[in-house]
Length: 276
Image 1: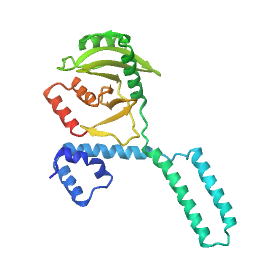
Image 2: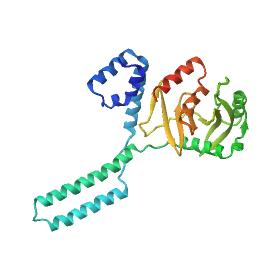
Image 3: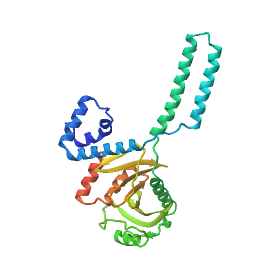
């Protein structure tokens, strides 16, 4: 019998029809008995369906069209020279066709598998790097969450919801109000032991990811990604869209304690980590 962590790890393989009959039956049996996993699978299936509905055909790049033209021209010249060689001519055509198909397949595969990094993730990494280069650039230095919340509310058109409870092992360094391309956000910096973790926080956005590396947990889609040597985690709920950034991968997930320090919150973090 599969437990929840086992079933969640098999989610994408199950939804893509890649499991054998025995594994599929075990997953189906678990989903019939576990409403939490069933809801998570339903959310992931809905997300994949939405993703497929928004995918459109992309024209081949110029270099691929050039590759096809060169291959066809070469084959045309070869057919003129070998018009009396029957089988040899046919074999050459098959070889060229295979090369062209392989080239086009490689281009198509690269387009399907290369993830598009959401702009907010790059923005969050840029703000994190700016702080690392010059810690004094932070507009407000304070470890008091309530004072930071009040300061941000006076400078942003939305109210960042920061937990008032201090979290053991997590120290708030400070914050600043930032803007990019007409978008405004709160940028907060924390210390977790030897790690620096920053949090970019905006009003909730409908973020669509082209990467398959998405974790569905508690009806929320989390998107972990690596960019420029940093580890990031982005997600949205009814209050905000968030991006955590740190050089340490585990520091990013430990930073979830910023908002989930209560007993129930710790259970949520533990369950989420089991899906990674």
